Length: 298
Image 1 (tube, rainbow, N blue to C red):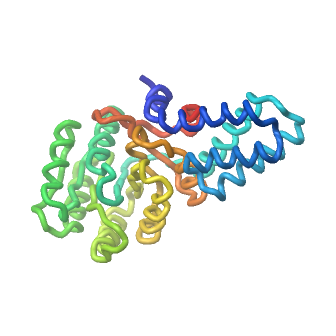
Image 2 (tube, helix red, strand yellow):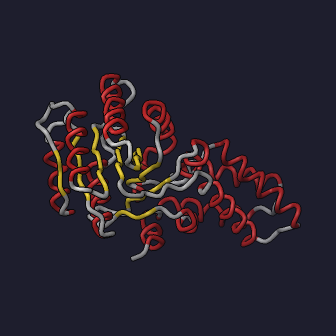
Image 3 (tube, rainbow, N blue to C red):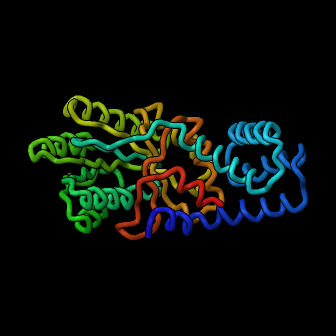
């Protein structure tokens, strides 16, 4: 099953909400101010932000007026085009070896599972992978990560619970360099901005990577639970301010009818979506494709 097919499946709730409302809109309204106001409401109900929604609908309105368009399919094609260009606005991320990928995010977004899937993905791409279990805060976190490392058949560097997370990162970097590892993935404790000690710990780990492995291609990715919707803005902003965020990993898309939030979040914060989780299995992670995502919303 390709990414488009998987996205079609996981975006069922988002797509059903948009498609049904668009059908009703075209049935009762000709193109005009009332039509565009309702189109705005549909996008906002899918959790696209008000700011981005207004920009998208303004572009559609201007083009439709200029082209003297009244055809439903043409308006939908304009909508898809605007959504794609908005979602594709942030510069894409290309992971190059040697790579260090630090995965951050709040509690419960699925970081551990995602790291296991990522590791497996890179192994399938014939890359050597090491995982650093730098979540020393949560009980049994390294044990859970070890299970995923075993499934993906990759090495894991871990210390005892309560150990200095930066020490784990330091040792993992030394090991990765010694073995010429292609990809080092660093797990981190789930944290909120109110946990100032954990945010400072994250900054310290960030400094260790930069100091100890300056030649690496270093990427900081935030895992976002898609069911969070617009609340994810705050998460990205907080982590971005602390260490800088290079990309987004989307999880739990199948559980939300508000998948549109990622369109405006990526556009307004200029952070690209890099990967999307499409299920519970080890293989269920894919490179993000903006066109497939937009097509799957309709």
